[in-house]
Image 1 (cartoon, rainbow, N blue to C red):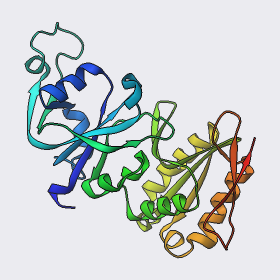
Image 2 (image 1 turned 45 degrees about the vertical axis):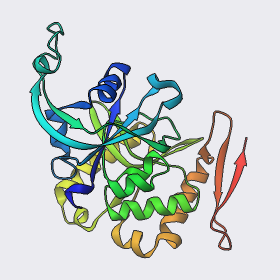
Image 3 (image 1 turned 180 degrees about the vertical axis):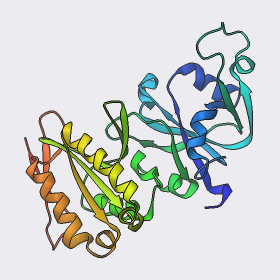
Length: 269
């Protein structure tokens, strides 16, 4: 991915920060946070903003984006010289300057109104995205499974973060059912050859199962060669055993895989 294609979706959770972005054309990210994306999406050439519940009609969606012009490091005192000393006063930030905000003709929404932090992605995915989960750019294998989920009407959340006993896990795909929750993981070939990764995932899976998650894992060959005759039926059977995907407090959908049709859903209330 070329540097010109790197795009970071950042969170805007208060109107004061949005006013700065709109009127002064800059945004701040803690230096410590940016290190997480150092190899993948830093520095970004583009910046987009996910607005939280504070913004009412524009809540839980991406509505604005801009081209990044310049990035520098700055202390909080430099950014907010009139702010009284507090617990954040010592923090260092990347101050990102950008061109005037542009508004999307159609917002990129979160169907489940989820909380996110930052989403490193690229300009192509951003332009094609219809909802938040379309933005994630983790691996080609995950993209393949996500495309299949969309084709068969399986609603899932990508990169959902779950905390268990102070340990925090990112789930490849979280599926919320009427009778439980499913974590679908896509493991590349390197996962099987790395004992340390296997040990970490064993702890992870046990933690998730303890708090009520079913964990399903699929390897490279299964995703590439057995998607519709193994992966999809396995996932669908688990969804149906948990009484279907939860659509609301009183309604859920079970999945019927009809070989003559791309998808068929049944509603249960």
